[in-house]
Length: 115
Length: 109
Image (cartoon, rainbow over the protein chains, first blue to last red):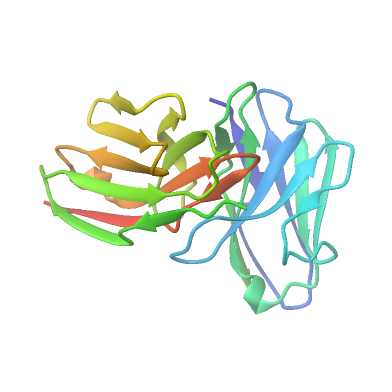
């Protein structure tokens, strides 16, 4: 399967700061990436779909000005949590759809803790 | 949109017994149903999947069944082992993925 990496794996920041999370596709090009958020003991919730060279598509209830997504190349998508608050503390996971298949491959996730 | 429900939310079984997790979906257009295993703090890992033109699929101790008419699908794990302990998510894909709420499986040695 595809190899997807994420950086950083965990981050602690102060309230009000911005945090950038990178998601990289390591073995084939990704025109689309999915960004999920997972709170403790809950399921994965799709936040947005990142599209290379165009604007991301956000799910209902997700503030696009707060969660900035950039997909400037076929191997890199970034999610920036702007002006982070404690309620943004969560596990953020990106995934890449498999080429020609229905499945998706997940990155290792980024654990964000906002103090 | 799609609505995926998953039961039970927690499941404890004795080592060697079978475990069954059930999911229902609402969108008849969904045509792909993967199951993921997620260990604490790690990424979800695909363990088995089934497409809508198939009723059952088996891979060693893991099997999935799909009833398209009733819009439900199930994960079956036989001869459970302690390392099967994890959270399991079902998902349904139409135009995007929709995940179930997860089942925390504990296999008691």
